[in-house]
Length: 153
Image (cartoon, rainbow, N blue to C red; front, top):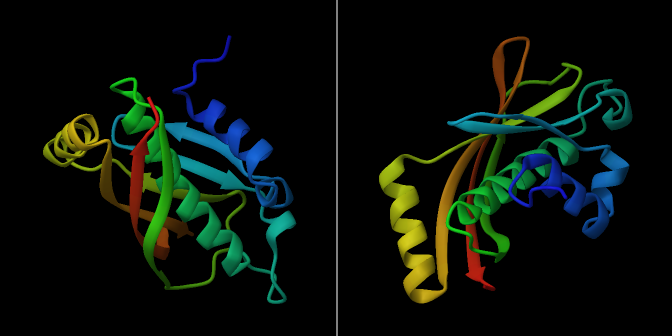
């Protein structure tokens, strides 16, 4: 049985519940102690300038935050309904790397603890996350998203 707290499981969930992820061919990337990545092939996500489509970049960043929020909730065995409620994105330079990779950074431990404590006590909490896309070793996209999680279990 697949562990429901793995990045691969979350991407599989997205493929089945969010059809556009299939069109973008989103894949699980790395999961480390301080970040996670989601990827997509450049060829399937080109714009008219032969660089990464802005919609793909925004989607990868948004979903990487959703995945991070899901994984954080899973640390306490909490199943949650998660939605991005606010986001800000800056496209700093064209992205031509293949695969396109969005990295969402895990918040500091006190922020995670406060979020999880609020989920336990109020069944609802918000978490602000930062993500980025790099291209040719420079930041191409800067993303900040606020995620609302409502406890289901």
